[in-house]
Image (cartoon, rainbow over all chains, first blue to last red; front, side):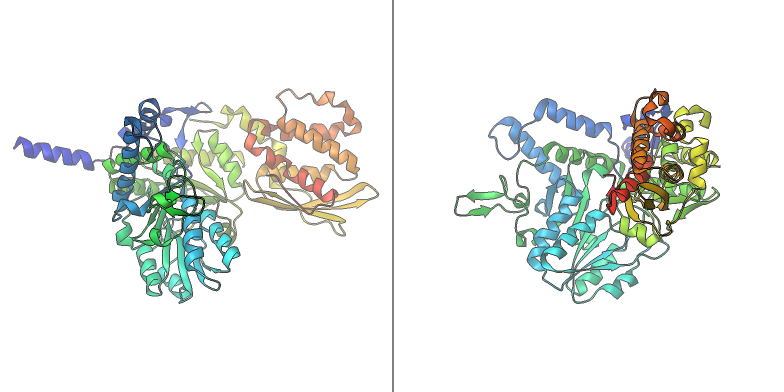
Amino acid sequence: MSLETGLKSDRREANAFDVASIRADFPILSRKVHGKQLVYLDSAASAQKPQQVIDTVRHYYESTYANVHRGAYFLSETVTSDYESARLKVCDFLNARVAAEIVFTKGATEAINLVAQCYGRTFLEEGDQVLLTDLEHHSNIVPWQLLRDAIGVELVVVPVRSDGDVLLEDFEKAINTRTKIVAVTHVSNVLGTVLPIRGITDLAHSVGARVLVDGCQGIVHGPVDVRDLEVDFYVFSGHKLYAPNGIGILYAKGDLLSLMPPYQGGGDMIKSVTFERSEWAEPPAKFEAGTPPIVPAIGLGSAIDYVSTIGMESISSHENAVLTYAMEMLATIDSLRLVGRPLRKAPVISFVIDGIHPHDIATILDRTGVCIRAGHHCAQPLMDRLELAATARASFAMYNTLEDVDKLVAAVRLAKEMFG
Amino acid sequence: MFGLSDSEDLKSLYQEIILDHGKNPRNQGTVEGHTCDANGNNPLCGDRILVTAKVDEGFIEEAAFTGKGCAISIASASMMTEIVKGRTIDEFKKLFASVRAVCTESDDVDIESMSVFGELEEDVSRLAALGGVRNFPMRVKCATLAWHTLLSCLEGNKSVSTE
């Protein structure tokens, strides 16, 4: 009886999402800026860090630091084991098959460049097509332009609809037998649009194309299962998932990494080296030349432990509640226009106000303690398509509250008052 | 609750004259029969402006601009196109120097001490309204974009970027 009660209570604890206790885990949230309580609404650019991650990083530098994969001594063995167990945590978090499918990079940008160069140059040839969408971040456009300039592939862009959606039928029109790679964002960093990834992979695979998903905004807002999504490559940056910066992830399905040449040469990625020739290590080491971002990787493992304890489903439902409230409240402001109303939306809101440039909005909000982003959000082609020079963007994370939304709305009203 | 009166910084950034020029910019468009033009680009915020000018025997007869930007960059462009009318290129450069000075120097820039500007003194003191950006380092480029662009226009360069 008591055991049963205990279990129930544990379960209730695990499922209850207590934003106050989560906020207490993020020390920065208690600071003030310009004398005002910080309201951080720029997590889509980079998320704040919980004490658990900060402690992990500090602990490593204070008591456990050494290089990985080298030393036959206690510290190096411990760090190596923790570095590799961080890889396993990423593997489990993505529901990948084996840890060898996970490469540590310095960020999502490097991961996309790695695929564009190593997969692209090996398996694509002149006249092949790489399919992108209007929603892409510059980091999922420019690496493919470099590939285009190197080997003459063609970049085809699936247009975004006026409501901010790119639907499966839009991909159906664009995909053909010349399509070799479909490189799409999971979630738009500007509009919050959630793309139908599973449908896209089915379509792409039906013509033999590979799918790379830029998961920077996707990984943070809900559970991601790379096997369920059937993606070939999935990349994300640690710093948006509450981990230190300087660490990113490339997931590559099955034997893809074995089929690709190394990205960079150096220590750690070889089996043997002579001046005549070198032999590569097996993946993932083959793609991790040089001393990797050891502590950031272990910090990412700690961040994954942190969000997993809370539960990605719980995080998602809390964030959705904040999003819904924010959309409702912002819509009550005269002359404010929400940019994009996609069918499925992550907690990222772009808006514009008649007569006030987004930069002026951001400056005024900052003086009230509210941090938002203003500009083109590294998505200039999307801005051009939407015929906007810039937007103001508020993005929400698990630590944001309805009260944060109220402060945002009050600050926007002040900006309007100031500009008459 | 936060009130506007709480922030002297904001009040000094968005002075009446800035808001006025920002909302109702003067000299928007292109100068008919212009002798030079240049594009200015602030990659940080995506602001782009086109400045055109008609120069005759070293005098800037007219200057105009098109483009979108924040209140600061538009107000600065608007004030600039008003003030440089009839000025020599050398005088424009002195005015630009005064803009840079008020935007970046410490709080106590003494406009009076800029006697070197002589008859430009009145213009210099009008432009001092741009000095509110001093407390907003990220916005200094907004205030100077139009000036950089007119400078490169006068020097025969077609484009300039603030980065």
